[in-house]
Length: 383
Ligand SMILES: [Fe+2]
Image (cartoon, rainbow, N blue to C red; front, side):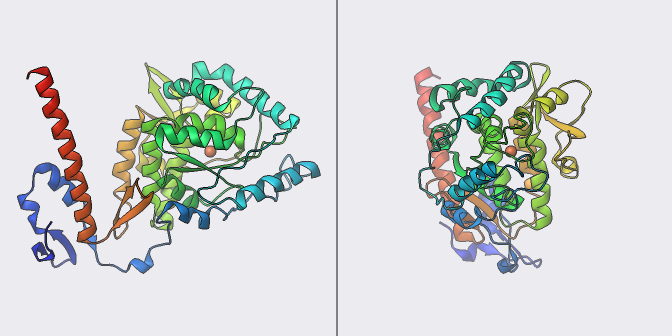
């Protein structure tokens, strides 16, 4: 489209397109955000460039893989530990593109799941956000969400793919924030497949499949929430450790413990709340401290794992949360911009003008489609 001789090089070492002056306001907005620094890309932490690269990071489990801590409810239960080893092996040997192995859950596991889902289902109508409540019946219909049946991750993954393009990838335990957020960039949600220990169905010190299926999945079936999740993930790719920590904290207080306002009252959309009876009640009891979600503030809040959160953050809507995260993501220091290519399920690193030009061409084509649609609509309406 435009040759490199149309670029100017200011003294600060940053290159801008000289033809910005010739563009429309919308195009200027796009181009002004594309600022290319010639710093050493070798300094950038490794990150997956395509969806199959997640095979390299999904096995880097930090804790609760096949080994349990001494204070874990299942630590002294050898049968449970053997079962956990089975799930860990399934997840560790999984490769991108394979179907997720179907599991024959034991009677005890189904009973545990039944207790958790029955108790939570009592609270959802008065505590869960609208989007969650809309999607839950679909999961019953298409994925076998029932109190006497633990849904299979493969069925859930196929359902989500059709709804929002998200897919599930089995994982053995906790990943680092960097590796977990990287999955979101590709609309991949790392999901545990084991069930918590049966001794206390309403408590788990770690995410288990009840938490994933009941807390996360209904929202991952929502387009605006999925977009929000992916943008968080994209912002983390190649970011510094400090920036990833801030993004992970924002993730924690939104995707895990977020609240939103709907029809004048507070509702939960965070999976940590929607899978915990006691904390779900507490967060909406009126006695919990609530602050507006503001990434610059939220990213400094301490994340509590074994107790209720000191504070919960509320957004007006997913759109508002997305807008705020988008602004925050622009402050993440990276020597390049990234764009996700849904056709190849890969990220395009916009580090030079040809790659930026490719994006502009795609945007022009999209705008052509919009223009054509508006013309046809106008003609149809006789305007
Ligand atoms: Fe979670």
